[in-house]
Length: 365
Ligand code: AMP
Ligand code: GLY
Image (cartoon, rainbow, N blue to C red; front, side):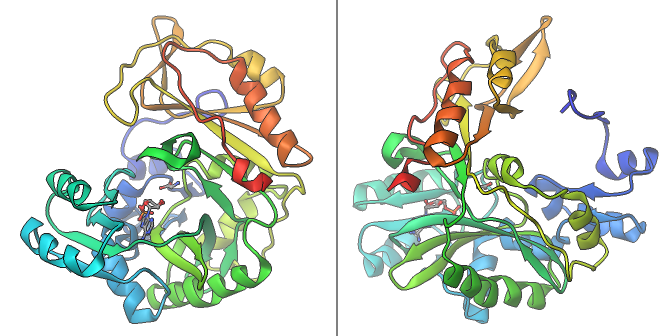
């Protein structure tokens, strides 16, 4: 961020007051769940995000599932269990595969798809406390994000994340190994259905403000909601921003003022692709402090390199996290966008780097 902005240390509210910020847009879920939006509004400051009550839609899977059920929002059949022994009793009713979800925030690592009793038992060893157990759904996953102002909602282009660590959606789930954004990821009819049955009922029920992110499974019976996030997705946002043709700021200001009605967003015709470069071992244990090289060359070739887990130390750029960089590029069509993103990737190196080689390849079929 330091390359394109001035970074301000400290608590968000203090920082906004000190810098006389005109508008604050909240990125991560933790401050939203902790009530940062409520605190800003109490001081009369403009902010884009949901209040703490609405942020529970991401902060608690049980709260979200109960909300879906009450509002008739299409989702997988589920039950809530308080501990492992209740979980074992409930598992018998679902068969395999089955999905187990920890209730609270887990940085993308609180969900296990168990294919048999042994995997379910192993999951019960790692997921503690209250769980949602739910029906396993099959289909394509789509990330659908709408900007909301408490009354109206403006959908962003649909995108697709790649959550599993290895090619072909193999291996454990991560925070996201890549994403792409292209016209036609969600049909016109499904887009309308999701707005009418998922987004608007939620905006209305909660006076929802900020980004409402529906993680969807497009099943044979139509779209069903796997989860809500209450923020822009990572890594979906990288290709979304690359593909957005409009200036985003007027829409954000309008959302913060309850004036979204009539706002529009234009998108480039060509798709955008983001490939995440991760540290060796991620999503398990990994080392940090590896020197990163080649960013200038990647950017000179047309990619935008978003930093996730990097730091400047020892007079050089180093890795500081599991997901390190999001190499993002656009093209006239999907093959061109994929080629441009991997061209950028090929110029970057750090010890142990690993990444998926099949980001956006589903879109080619
Ligand atoms: P969530 O955090 O609820 O989106 O779950 C993380 C990932 O687990 C999703 O992106 C899916 O790949 C998978 N998943 C979650 N729920 C289900 C389900 N009911 N059926 C199949 N896969 C699921
Ligand atoms: N891409 C999913 C997330 O941001 O949680």
